[in-house]
Structure formats: structure tokens, C-alpha cells
Length: 201
Length: 201
DNA sequence: GGTCGAGTAAACCGATCTGTCTACCTGAGT
DNA sequence: ACTCAGGTAGACAGATCGGTTTACTCGACC
Image (cartoon, rainbow over all chains, first blue to last red; front, top):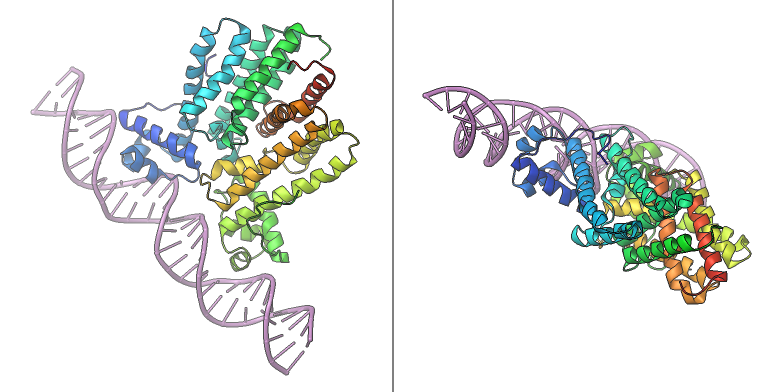
């Protein structure tokens, strides 16, 4: 549950907070490489000096951006998991949460996947955040399934992970409407089928 | 089957062909914005003048890159679909083809999804290629399912699309090994279940 | 022999990139 | 009264960006 390999966070003064908010909007909307530090500073209403006093480099802004997104997503998801009475409901709540998150935070797909498309170096400090977030989600699915169908936890958890990732992509590219709802219903069918059905799958 | 809204292609002289090959490698590996035209020219062993004589702009190189990737993928997939005896086999052949394609062409996920992460403007000529490719894939899945379970074609086709997209993402981010094989087996289970099973799903 | 398409080599342009710097201002804590 | 963190304003630097231009070479085709 703890944020495992956090690659350092920076103290967020008011100016830094505005800068991070602006960077987040711009990075997600236009892509990381397409957004310059001058634009971030202008949008945030701070000077470049403030940016570099707080973050030290653009790379560090990127790191903070992804770590912040990850943190916010987990905080967004947590109460929905707590409020769901059964593991079955908790599983479906993940898809519902993603649908609502997308409605609030723009619809260009997963910021981690998008960032990964622009960062090729595995030694980049942002890389660990990206892969860490995906591993966390996979573990979440697997653990939730374990309470329902222990024998199939690994396999079914991975399947739900694929459905979820696919739905995020489909939503971002607007492949068809309601992709997250569709994935949710498919997940429900999978769960019902495995719980009450034969184990031959 | 015809490439619908092709936004113009450029005649490929030998130099242009080398440039496109180099651009493809670099764009896919490092991202579009991170690769400059000077680097493309150097890697291809051509001068910048040749680049601009043939393509006119970097934007056009990007368009050719994506159109070329799309074209190659369809050419890669076509014989595998023809060789598969039944619709059931053809469906699974898509997942097998993606697995083999990834083994050959590097493992950073779907070039269309990655490009979409860097192109925010829907008016960009590359946008039509990206969305067109995804719509083509969705139609492929749906049409193949229709021969097996007509009543569920739309729904099951979308589910297979999500599984496939999710598997590509999972492969690119290395979320767990064998994601495309896992998606294939899950697709098989879904198909078997819907063909012989109850229609209550 | 003349024309033309495809190419090399390399200088050049204005804009933008990340990052640094100096000088000054302001408000809170002690 | 003094200090100091956090900030503004804005010039500056070196590199790189996409793109243009001039001058020249080479081979094929008729």
C-alpha cells in the first residue's frame, strides 16, 4: 500500500503547486516533449526562476507530475474500494472509478501509458513510477480476485488488467463509446462465470 | 478493405525509403517529438535537402511513418487470416500475429497509441490514420465474430478489441510476460463459451 | 549531347529549447 | 530591527529545432 520506490518528491510551495498543476494539464493534453518550461511558467503565473528553484530540472517536473497523478488516482480509488461491501463489488468499483476519473480528468487515456510513449530510457527516474503504477494495479486486481476465486486469481487478475488497460486506451482513442462500462460488464460476466461455473476454464 | 481516407502518400525514391525506415525506427523507439530531422537524415545517410525534397515537412514524415506501419501490419496479418481455416481460427490468428509482430518489430507497444500520446490536434493529418487503424481493427474483430455468434457480434467484438489493446499495452510496459498469449487464451475461452454456452450473457 | 531527376555537401535562418543569472520585493518569525 | 524563504522581472547563454538555399555531381534516357 505504501508508495514503494518513490524517487524523491519536492516540497510544494504555493508557486510550485501552481506550476505542477499547470504542468499536469499541459503534459497530459499535449505531451511531455511538446511542452516547454516557459509555457509551464506562463500558465502557472510563476517565473522560470521559481520553477528551477523548486524542481531543479524539467525532468524532475515530469517525475513530480507522474508521481502526483499516481497519488491522486490511488486517493480517488481508495474510498470507493472501502465503500464497496464485497470483493465482487470492489472489482467492479475499479472500472467505475476509472470511468468517473476519465470524465473528470480529460479523455486522453492513461497518463502513464502516454508518458511511456515519450520516455525510452529505463534509467529515467519517471520509468519506475510508470511501471510501479501498473504493477500496483495488477496486484490490486489479482488480490481482489483471490477473495473470490483463489485458484484462478493470477490468471483472472491478468485478464481483468488487460480489459481495464484496453478500455483506457479505447476511451482515449475514442474507439467506441462507453468502453469502460463495456469492460465493467465483461468483468462482471467473467466473475460470475468463474464463481458459479465450472473450473474447466 | 481499401485504405479509406489515405491522407496522401509520397513517392518513395531510394533515399526516401531509407529515410522512412530510419524515421520509423527512431520515432517508435524514442517518440516523435524527441527525434529531429537532422538525426533522421544522419541515420538514413541522406541530406536534409533530400528529406525536404521528398517529404516537404517533418509532419509529412510522421504521416508516412504511421501510414507505412499500418500498411505493413495489414500485409503481415492478411496471409495469416487467409491460411486460417475457420472464423474461430482467424480470430485467434490476430492475437498470434500481434505476438509475432511484436517479437519482430520491437516491444514498445502500439505505434498508433504511442503517436496519439504526442498528437493532440484532431486536425493533424496523422490523426485520421490513427483512428482509422483502430476502427479497422474493431471492424475486423466484429466481422470475424459475426460468423460465429451473430447475436453477440458487436458486444463480443468490442470485448476482443479491449483484450487485444490491453495486451499490446501490457506487452509494451512489460506488465507481465506473455500478455498476448494470455489474451489469446482468454479470447478462446470467450468464443467457446459463447458458441456452445447459454445466450444469457 | 543535352536534359532531368535524385542525390551530396554545407552554410544559413529565425525560432525555441533548457537552464542560469542579477537585482529587487515582500511578508512572517524571532 | 533583522533574517530569510519565496517570489517577480527580465536579460542572457549555448544548443537544437524545423526549414531553406546555393552550388555541384552522377547516371539514365532519348
